[in-house]
Structure formats: structure tokens, C-alpha cells
Length: 291
Image (cartoon, rainbow, N blue to C red; front, side, top):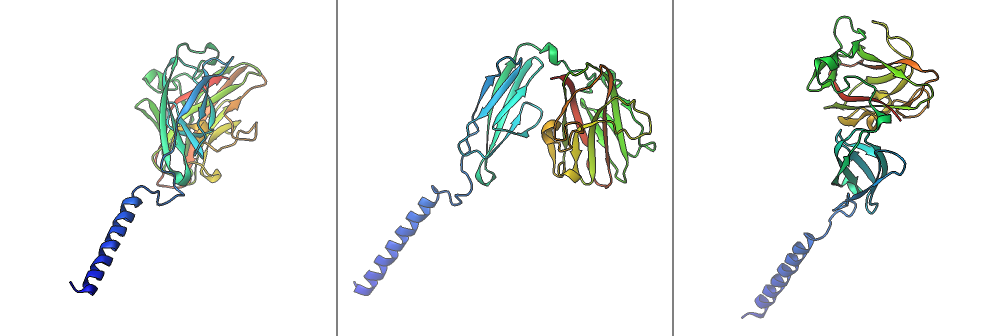
């Protein structure tokens, strides 16, 4: 055989083998080391001593940048050492979403069985799940939008606020009896299928009696405000974890309230928008509980 031809064939064969080896190796190598391949979302559950139905969720920290937690109401941003309270008896599935480098994610779930309802943390809201006509009747419409442009509808165990824009808004409320100097927490499950534009959703716990046609502004506790940077993309979860509206009393983002006198206060939920094209906001599981 011609020596030159033999040499060229040998070179081609060695190149082919080398390329084949490189290709087979590339399947085992993370081609982008800035993106985590596997994120360990495992966590432990520890009952908190001296606190009924309260648990510490501890995520393993290796390779985890941030955490989201879901107890059945949608995932909300949280801490890697997250304390949760489950005041009502029942079986809960807790899901941890661990976020690693390059926004890679992993999930892990465990169950918590709560044997007994905490009598000190019973829900003071009536009809907070909007399950029946009797539940819905516990809420009063504020009639802030006389034309009906903005309105609440009730279906599928939830309440939905429809916002046409142009500054139209609407509110619902109910009276609640509170005890002097006792701390309470307010929360609810809230969702919207897309981001909002120039929209507010606010929750108040005030002593002022609501008046039909009059915008309520007594003691804002929590909420969503696109001007403050939340609600600009689709969301689903507890308002306490999603909202960015500051508590008027504490000056930070907090769903805790207390009152200087025992008596009647009013839980008011009010929402509106300046822009058209916003999808409705839906709520359920509205709660007002002793802390």
C-alpha cells in the first residue's frame, strides 16, 4: 500500500476515535457549571416546644440559595429555617422547593398530621372559604363602584374581584370582635393568572365603621401593590408571603395586628386598578386568628 495513503488513513482513524471519546464524555459533564444539575430539597420537620401545632421546617443547606414552602395553599418564598403554624386539625402536605445556582430547582414533600385544633387560634372570620350562600352572606359589599364596573363574584369556594381599570374599585367587609392588647394574624390564599398593572389589593383592620360609597382607609395591614413591586407577574399562595404592602402600625411587611381596646373592628378587603386588561384576583381561606 502507498505509504502516504496508509498514513492519511491512520490520521483519520485517530481523529475519529478522539472525537468519539469527546462526544461520549460531554454527556457526563455539566456544560454550564453555573447551573446546578441536582438540587437537594430535603428538609426536616421539628415541633416547636411550647407552641401548639407549630413546626420548624429546616432545609438542608448544601447547594440551596433560596426556598419556597407550600402547605397546600400555593408556594410562597420563605426562609431555609421556616416556622409554620397549622392551627386546624387535619393532614397537611408540606412541599419544599429548593432553588440552586442558575435557578435550578428541586422539590421534596412530607406530611404533617395535626391531631387537634388549637383552641386559642380559631378563625374569627365567618365564611372565609366562601363555600355556601350562608358563607357569602357574612360579607357586605362596600358599593365603591356604583355602576358595577368593578365587582366581586363568588364561585368554586372563592371570591374574585374583577377590575376594569380607570380607577374603579370595590370592597367587601365583615365585623370581628377582638380583645385588647392581644395579637392577631390576618391571611388568605390569593392568586392571579398573570401580572397586574397599576393595581392595588389592600386589607384593613380598622375601628371605623365602613360606609357605602366611601373609600376605606383605616389601618391598612397588608396587601399587593404593583407600585411597591409585587403582583407584577402571576402569583398563587398566601398573601403574607406574596404581598409587599407595609403594615401601617409596624412600618414593615407584617400581617400582625393588635388593638388598644376590646370590641368590634372591621376586616375590609379593597381592590382596584387604573389600567385595563388586568385579569381578576381570586381569594379564599380568609383568616383572622389569635397569635
